[in-house]
Image 1: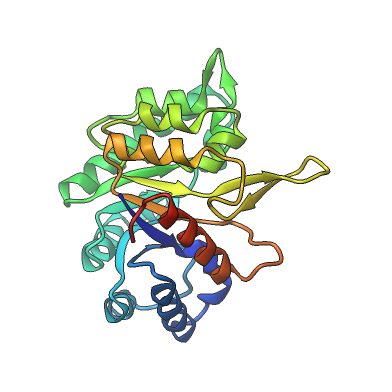
Image 2: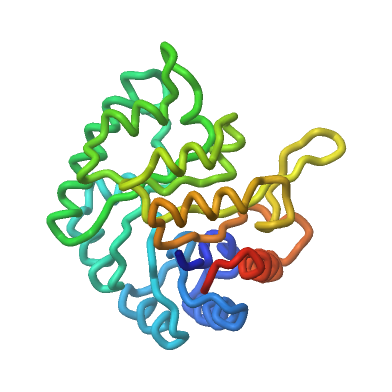
Length: 255
């Protein structure tokens, strides 16, 4: 398993092509050799690939919009093939599918269709969770429904270990459950403030069991661990990525 920087962490520094170029340089300087493309401003497909190549950064995965999958699959395929990027990520379930178990089942079927189209093009659909998927409907969580009712040959997952924990589930258990259906994972850590608020933190600075998480990922053959921090609070996000990188290196992961 290799680590990557989830560019959504740096979204406020990715507004223009010049911003993107400078930020990719900094990411490389921090020690990362790969990025997940998400949260970037308008830029030509080929220009972004050239900037990543210039810094020696692999584009290991993406997050794209649901409407792109629904209405512009050809464009999605073209972009990912141009970027030599296999993993096509959807960053969350559209709100209209979150109301009940039928909504999750309907989306699982649709995701399977997306996945089949992408697989035919040599790509792989991956679904990224938050915490709401762990709400229960007649004894099953939304995540259970997505996992069980989507086509295992065309739908993979990109567990976000923070959001699994926030949903009251066990990240290690869920990673192991994903054996054969997960090659990309999201790493972020969780702390609790004295006034009992959950907050994002740099990997290794919080309370989550990252030794167990990393071992489980290694055991099931995860290829990429994308480091993401939705909010770095009073810290510069480049510094947050640097701290996470250093802590993961201490735990034996490689760039």
